[in-house]
Image (cartoon, rainbow, N blue to C red):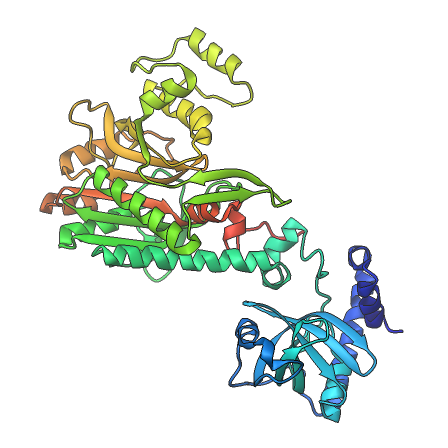
Amino acid sequence: MTFAERLVFVHHGFIIVGLFMAMSSHDTSIYEQERRAKMQKLRDLGVDPFGQRTDGLMSLAQVRQLYKPEMGHDGGPCVRTAGRIMLKRDMGKLSFLTLRDETGDLQIGIDRKRVNDQGWEIRNNLDLGDLITVQGALGVTNKGEITLWVTELAMACKSLLVPPSKHEGLTHVEARYRQRYVDLWANPDVMRVMKLRVRIVDEIRNYLKSKGYTEVETPMLQTIHGGAAARPFITHHNALDMKLYLRIAPELFLKRLLVGGFSKVFEINRNFRNEGISPRHNPEFTMLEAYQAYGSWETMADLVEEMITTVAYNVFGTLDIEHRNASGEVVRTIHLARPWRRITMVDLVQERTGWRFDKQPLTQAQIEEFRQKYPGKDLKLNGSPAEQLVEIYEKLVEQTLIDPCFVTHVPSVIIPLAKENKSDPFFADVYELAINGQEISPGYTELNDPDTQRKHFEHQVGDREEQQQVDEDFLTALKYGMPPAGGMGLGIDRLVMMLTGAESIRDVILFPLMRPEA
């Protein structure tokens, strides 16, 4: 019995997991050698192990949907399909294989009496993970399993490496992220989430376009990194011999378009921030930003509230989003039904902590009281009153906001691109939308006074490396005149996390950034 045959035998003895886990690099090498030997046997038969173009293929889901009970054992239509072998049961002159593609699984039956000699020899050299194309009549087995009875069998690609087990999939977290190309077909739920992400983005685009917004593209390579306080990635353009930055935000260019005469614009694209990696942060992430001339933060709050609820209902058919643990138990339900709560940051902090912000710095006694009351929160409370308020909100309050909540009236010194509130200039006319314990979307009444904008640039808080540079060209654009406007951002990755129940941002990004293997 060959090593590959032992794998199939043990698989059906239900102890395959231990075998895969225990497989040494020497075993893997032997396994690859045996697969390469089968590859050569196929070539000797005149079969290309890596296939060729095949027209007229149906997805596995489409094939399953064709089945009707009156078709009986093999009375269905003759169809052609393709997939990766996930399960293989050999029983003498009959084999049952489970194929998988992006739409799901389908069982096929290979009966010696239905295929020609070459097809049967191909069957003898198949392994788990191989890609094949098949043609045959649709029907069922005696046990009622929908099955395609194969009459023609061809190789599409010989797999030279052992796949993960059917029952465990690719379970090692690091391996899953590094080998997403395996994770997608080994763990069907990963494919489901990634396709939901595509659907969610499509629905966002459809919604914004239905509201009269124009989709645009703005530079990712910028001479000045603006639009946010974040550490940029720095690169160099050889031909012009100049330093460039990967953008941290598209905001300043989108506002230039308002100056140019666009009334409603949006962009869905990548931002890059040279910062840490965590379950909620990836250095490369997808952001939606939208701007509307003659709008305000309220305009954008209404927009994002309607947009998210519309998207959620169109994709999931409900506004109650359940998050489940690994056992499938519901651990939290997020209620998206409108209207969403709106409350000032000061009122919310008082509601959750009992402390009423009065624009005065915390006393040392108050600081100690906070640290004793909330141990382990790493509260940094030695900054300005504005910084203290935001620190307490972000460390103690934001994580408690599971259902949607617009947190309004954030200290203006924290947000240099927003208009100050007319009644109290200490605060800016903004919202921060929190759902599932994290910020999903900020929105502003945009600052369009060039003189005030210059002052804000020059006094922006943050360490020296992250300070907003003075973008003279943007200030020149404002001098030509930008209409009053509302603007908003929406973290696509975090939105998908919230809607799909993913616990890590890496679970909703196809290829998250990873440290190279040693």
